[in-house]
Image 1 (tube, rainbow, N blue to C red):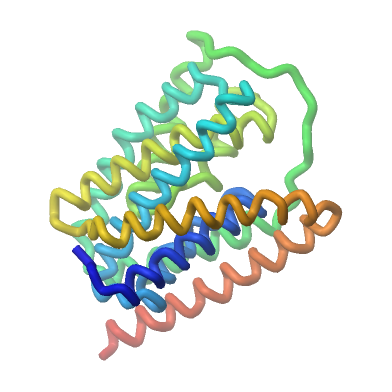
Image 2 (cartoon, rainbow, N blue to C red):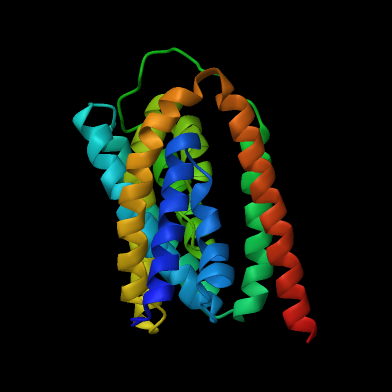
Length: 262
């Protein structure tokens, strides 16, 4: 467990940055956690960075879920079914990732980051419609979508919100706002499952997880008033954030390739 004060401070800063971006722009921010841990905090093993990131994302999602649940925005039957089947998928995906060389995995992770950046550039129209209730007819679709998305989230070690939200919308017909709130249970479940799997291999640093969590609380608190001020410029800010993710994904890919070649 890391006890170095500088590393813990940088991890707290990283957790704050990720939480701030998530608060301002929604999904996508968690993919920056792994690069920050590797290239700012100085974590040497990519598997450890992924394990710590998954744990931190899970804890931050639980905090956000509490607020959404209190506001009554979470569709619990859909959320639970998606999370349970997705957690099984996340265990499978993370088990597969653990068998891959860390730097090869980083190269694949860079591709996933680029996909997140591109998805954030796509416009997301707000659709007003009646919210669905889980029934037997839609249950297989919800379960299959959860398993598929969970497998991807576990493999890449990310919260998977950018996949969970469209997956919920496609499987149930719920609106974007409701899907974003409902997705948080799955983000927490997938992150916890992935982190638990990595912990079994000794690839979790509890000191860094704690530091990122503390920083995440501060980042969320700072992001709430900023999100209200962003207002009409939210689209521009989201576009710039997507551009940042694309640049970082290219950097991660180049570093991974150079390491593999060296």
